[in-house]
Amino acid sequence: MIRLLWRDITLAFRSGGGFGLGLGFFLILVTLVPFGVGPNGEMLSAIAPGILWVGALLACLLSLDRIFALDFEDGSLDLLATAPIPLEGVVAMKALAHWITTGLPLVIAAPALGFLLHLDSAAYRWLIVTLLIGTPALSFIGSFGAALTVGLKRGGLLMSLLVLPLYIPTLIFGAEVVRRGAGGFLVATPLAMQAGITLGAIALLPFAAAAAIRVALR
Amino acid sequence: MSLISVKDLTVSRGGMPVLEGLSFAVSAGEVLVLRGPNGSGKTTLLRTLAGLQPPYAGEVISEPESVAYAAHADGLKATLSVAENLGFWAGVYGGHDIEPAILHFNLDALRDRPAGNLSAGQKRRLGLARLMVTGRPIWVLDEPTVSLDAASVALFASAVKAHVAAGGAAVIATHIDLGFEETVFDVTPFKARMDVVRDDFDEAFL
Image (cartoon, rainbow over all chains, first blue to last red; front, side):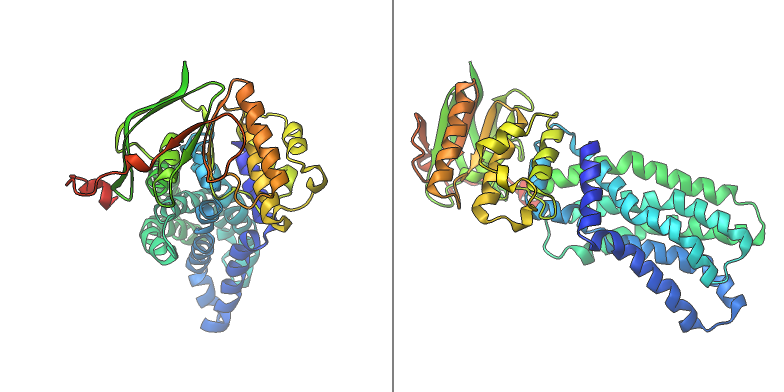
């Protein structure tokens, strides 16, 4: 399974698009927002938590359909399904690889972009913590959506529609933690809720996604 | 003792039965060649044997995880080199040595070339070399000789011979004569009758 993780990370680095796409999108979105809403520092710092989280979410969504579609097209998914690795393990490793190549770079880039949006200095810590806790949920929920639409031609739109409602709780709690952190309030409750969503997604969704792939392959 | 056998098997594609009443057994050292015109259900049968889809009726009897499957698509990654592609599958199947497979399929000179730059026949050879690193006793092959030249077909035939001589077995769907002792199984007489009404709503829905 480690081999699969390495292969997916190597592929993402070598084929360019996989690795830079999400990060580039995040960067573009966040740099454009101040131009759109004007350079008013107070307003920017008020909307910064929301913008950063929405940007991270959309950047994640952008590369989701690559998780299984490429392997499905070149026949690797058939071969992985007959390999000695359980399909649940395949899904978990591919979701983890997706997180390492899209989620983790966003976590690392977010503080620098928070600076562009006048993010309150007390909130940086919480921005990193929530992104670190929340983005794995985006990858695992996304892998489930990608698995559901793997056999479909141009399933990207359908996948976005399936996945977006499931992303909303993570978005709400994530942005809430940053907002409360900026105001100096207690953050324990939304943080715990977000961590719960992430752990639940990691524990349950690989099984659902594997079942969906089995149906798609038959 | 047969490695893989099917009993009264019906296989379906998209919820419609395509072949029914199949019964055969393949023992160690045996090659079963499936014949039949295009669209007769050979691929569907092979996918069922490989466990990629459940039987519509009847059963497939084999040891779990004993089948190595190779389809029309080779499952190669264009940005990985020949050795990396093969090494990945060897790792997935428990770390078999890739050297014998590379040498047998004459891929030594192409070792560091990205799979995306290979010709169709070279890709096919790499896809077939993968079978040798799986270490599985039953090879289930769907049209393995597509886009291979005569010399490569001979390489493939000798790989299959060595595999069955070592106690393996192979089920191959092909239209050409590979030149080894084989049992030919024509699927045409087992074509499913379409006039039988079946309650297959669920299957068709999925």
